[in-house]
Image 1 (tube, rainbow, N blue to C red):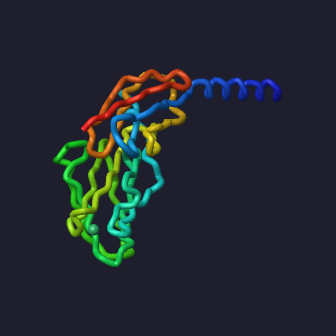
Image 2: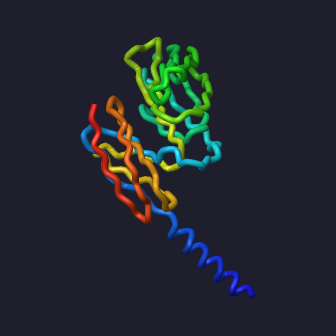
Image 3: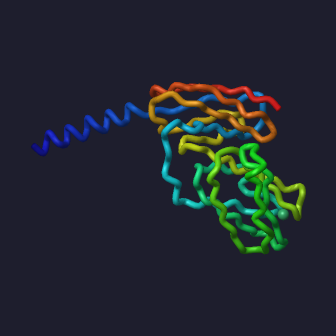
Amino acid sequence: MKRSLVLAVLVMTAFVTSQAGTISGKVSGVAGESVVYVDTIQGKTFPAPTAQPVIDQKGLMFQPHIAVVQQGTTVEFLNSDSVAHNVFWISVGGNKKLGHNLGTWPKGEKRPFKFDNPGAVPLLCNVHPEMSGYVVVSPTPYFATSDKSGEYKIENVPDGSYTVVAWHEGAKNQSKPVTVAGDSKADFTLSK
Ligand SMILES: [Cu+2]
């Protein structure tokens, strides 16, 4: 009885493992980090992550410069500089109705914001016009940041058919259908 249970668990584990793969490839046409994510999956929602990543304003820069989060994530915006910083954005995913100003605050303070809409959020500071950063909000938990050469890998993607989006600062998004069956490949070429 016990042995057959163990066997059943082993078989199930093998089955579950075989149902998930990766999407990997290269983003070309642009220099530096890109973001690749699986777009909204019809009829599927994902619980919002409980982790609250921090975007720091330090040395007159948004750090990290690019943060990718799952839709529904609350991001903490921290000011570590001795000057006041502001955080605002004029759109989310190109939708100007989703523009927002978080306000201006001094060193050591944090302000949270929950990103409920997918797409890229270009961060700006109205005290320092030269500052810029990005939050890229992925509608699914399947996303990755590429390395500097554009190579990326998204892990633990269930087998299935998806639309995959590549994003790069200052370039046009590219979407393409990708069928995942085990380890799958998808390359992108972006342009301004
Ligand atoms: Cu600033």
